[in-house]
Figure 1 (spheres, rainbow, N blue to C red):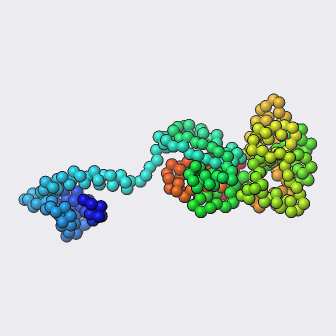
Figure 2: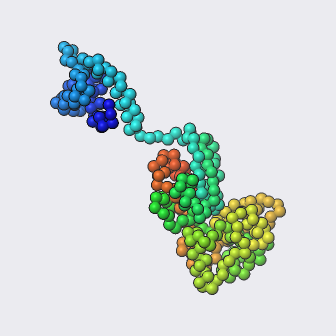
Length: 326
């Protein structure tokens, strides 16, 4: 049978044929299928024309299948079984899921979920593997070309075919240790911040999507030059700078991580966290409540495994004290 002949097949005809075979009666088969007897008789006539065979002969006890009907029955049953499986709801076996997910995440966002995520995967999805890179200016292209599965950042806009979901909001802080001249203060003004050396983490002046970029521009328009003494993507470098008395502007999740790590190290002085200066927050588009977006390509939107993984990350991020749910 050629493809154009296959197009003549109607699944309903195959279902009618198998039901008649099982019931041995058009009337009983019609009742089972909730059809009228004339309608099912019409389907049987179409089947006879399609396969060029009588298929059934009438006997005293009911219908008797022909040899051709018995052959067809053996062929059609597995087809209908496969179609039943095809139409069954898709399920996800997380325990046996064998897949690698590639993430592009900023360090500040990563701190919000990585530890509980690793615990969850170890217990619930031991065959799932993850690859993590730092979110950068090329990460959107990675989502488009399939080299990245999920991105998490403070994105303002995304291109077509990239879906986004607001995870929540996070705030910044200033980390000081006892070597900083303003360590004993309970708050900092913008002038306080500008009058001393400070270090920043992942501030990219060429990336207009980065949440602090617009604030820097506004401050410069007002005559403030909020240029850090040191910019770094390395938390180790930032830690050494704080140790030597620099203020560190960073997300509160990283700030609290710093506080914990530095207090545990005997060679470091104690550190404290202070709010971002009010003058900076007031100029900030988000008033120091920065939206964290998750993004992924449209092609993965209905992938059950992908959906499970991204929803698990969102759940874990929203359970942390550093993310305010929308």
